Amino acid sequence: MTKNIANTEVNTNVILPSFDRTALTTRIVHLGFGAFHRAHQALYTSEMLEKTGSDWGICEINLFGGEELITQLREQDHLYTVAEKGAIETTLKIVGSIKESLHPTFDGAEAIIEKMAEPQVAIVSMTITEKGYCADPATGMLDKSNALVIADLNNPTQPKSALGYIVQALKLRRDRGITPFTVMSCDNVQENGHVAKATILEFATLLDAELGAWIKDNVTFPCTMVDRIVPAATPETLDEITKLIGVEDACAIACEPFRQWVIEDNFVNGRPDWDLIGAEFVADVVPFEEMKLRMLNGSHSFLAYLGYLGGYAHISDTMTNESYRKAAFDMMMKAQAPTLNMPEGTDLEGYANLLINRFTNPSLKHQTWQIAMDGSQKIPQRMGASLRFHLDAGSDYKWLAMGIAGWMRYVSATDEKGNEIDVRDPMVEQFKAIYQAHGVTVSAVKALLNIEAIFGTDLKDNESFVTEVTKAYQLIITQGARAAVATL
Image (cartoon, rainbow, N blue to C red; front, side, top):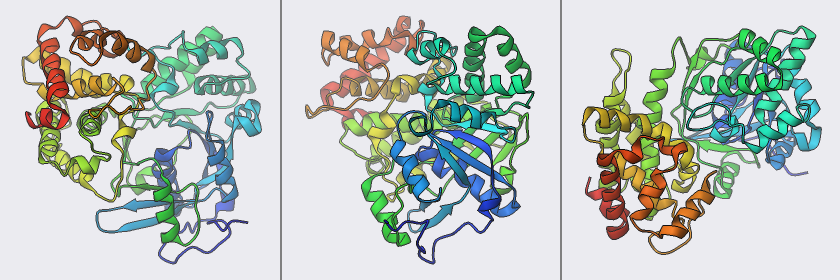
């Protein structure tokens, strides 16, 4: 048997869970055992258990793919390592909050639905990416043309989507007279709880109007703001962690030391005391969420597209170029900060400086290509509202225009050296069709601006905006991304 953290002693410098893991019960079912969840919510829960000795265990579920990861997790007795990599030192922690795991491929849909319907389950949480909510980006409501939605409405007892599983489990709880669970989104989606609520309620109502009404009256959907830079695990990362802990850990993940979690305190069936280890429970998450989405995620997208095109593999690489560094800071302070409505005393300049320091961390190999994924879902949230703010105010938004132009050039699927870009996006076929018709020329700009799901109906007719983005795009295709960023 391969030596791993379940059956071998790890190095003495690793922080191990000291609470009684056998006392845990599955009170949280989590959908999406991905990199971010491993370094964030599962770790917070493990550290909360250290302080409280409570029984809030997690059942991990991957609905799409990830069979190998779940298999590996089981082989490791549901233990894994988080390596918090600072610029100078790395802290190693073994996470012990996971009680069990399921996968439809191994266990079937019914076992997952039954697990979510168990009376002690109080929270179903999610990191399923923007796509997982089956929402129309333009309206925020359920996308009734989504293939998963159509399939689940036709066959609700064998769901494919997260929505289908949640609604079916809530139906069982209603029918059995069991208190419902809280549905908690931990995705990087603006007002994520409201998005989850809108799509789940509409889905449930289409299935059964009475069930939809019951969910509306009895289930809560708190919004959360999550923040931690967690690059996708690479063979190099796993090798490095193996050397540091002394044994193999196929589920290990590396991340930055910084973390933040702001949670709307709106739970229908109890919650863990995550605030004991740094989470903040608040009445309104939205201001914090918008601060993060616009200042961190907006500048991240800016650096991802223009960085990738400029030949930078990682965000920290872009920070070695003073033009990129200054442009990212100015984007935060001049394009994004003025659009925010924060509680009194919030230090936005301090936050921007903190972000630049986080981006600069050379220990964190956060790929520009990874952040560039799913731009059609991210651009509206990260730049759309700020852009409209400046258009209404008549103020300067050149950093936003350059970021959008960088995205447009990136989705042409060919880099500045003529190499193919592996563009991962739900709308990739639309982008292909546009570039087949226009080539990498400024005429592609208007065609891309016509995609209502990304830009709505207003921006394509705003002459100032069209001119600014076209100018930025022209600069990128004639002079290259690095030179274009330097003009800012």
